[in-house]
Length: 429
Ligand SMILES: Cc1ncc(COP(=O)(O)O)c(C=O)c1O
Image 1 (cartoon, rainbow, N blue to C red):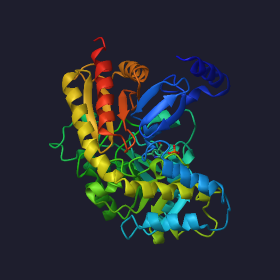
Image 2: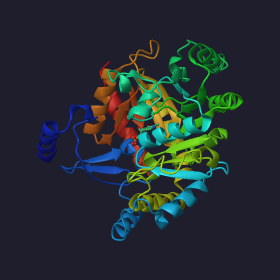
Image 3: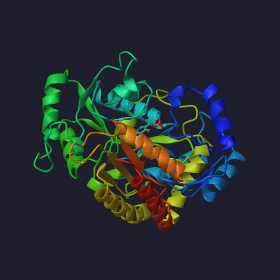
Image 4: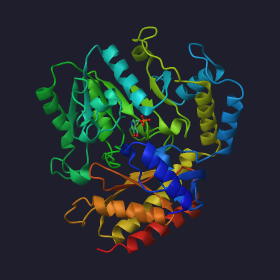
């Protein structure tokens, strides 16, 4: 560890809370595209995008220029519209199917979840919401109440009443012990049983991630989301799709819902929308958002001109550099390379994902599928030591996330896979 890193980490330990739980002892100094340098000048290839944020790459000059220009002009009139906000709203809404005709800006993904739940409850007039095992939608009280994991809520007392949970299709570890496709998506049929037992008859909405990020990059089988949507429509439920991390080209389409031509009633956005600038959004239907009265929902910094100017620049960059196509094509190549590694190592249980987002699940061995969190921790530290910036997630702490900025070059993909392979080859089993 370099001297500057050591010095700063000592200060951090003294003044910052231990819950911050850094992935590895590295202090980022600056970054460009898909490369990062720490405060001691060590170089890394980025497989994190700073937790799926920097979709357009780190320190993109067009984003930096837009922010500098805006900072010199206007930062924050609350209670009054600005050109940046109005133009961003129009541009964003035009990227959605026609029924999603309104956008509302907030600052974080958690706030977007809260706003979506409030809108769904007001519109439906019902208080119950269906969520899924392993689901993660943020850490404030609303999102915590729909979190499908104890990790977020243990010890915090009663959550907001009304959430009903059902298993997410985690096919690698099916909670019903079934196998896809023979199961015919039993988890969907199970929904009716859950509602029959748990609901008071006041179910108004459901919230789901197109793939579960924090739970371990769990991708549902093709067709699951469409069938779920049909199930929800038959019951007149508001369908909230949490695209805070799956949007902005991450999965190889602008929005993850495009893969199955879904028609959600509410879509939440975050992370990639600002590519590092704090902004998040709820995109929805007029009839839903207009059920809120004047002043019932707003946020001091939501839609501030600086963030909106940044988000407009992000859209320009995505279009100009064709980042969605890039994520699809180069991401396919990355997937092939990762799947090759799965064949090579008995401790890689599963590789799943699409576009520029993959989860690699480490296990004791392929037959037992027993999660290997200690091994995962060791791999994270060794990758970082070797110049590959990675992080781990998952219900069992045994999933490595592979989510580089969408601008990553093929040469850097090759180099990063080489580093990864070399780290794995030295693991003693
Ligand atoms: C799917 C999903 N929803 C919501 C959130 C919460 O976003 P934020 O951390 O910006 O509050 C996250 C953050 O990781 C997320 O992955």
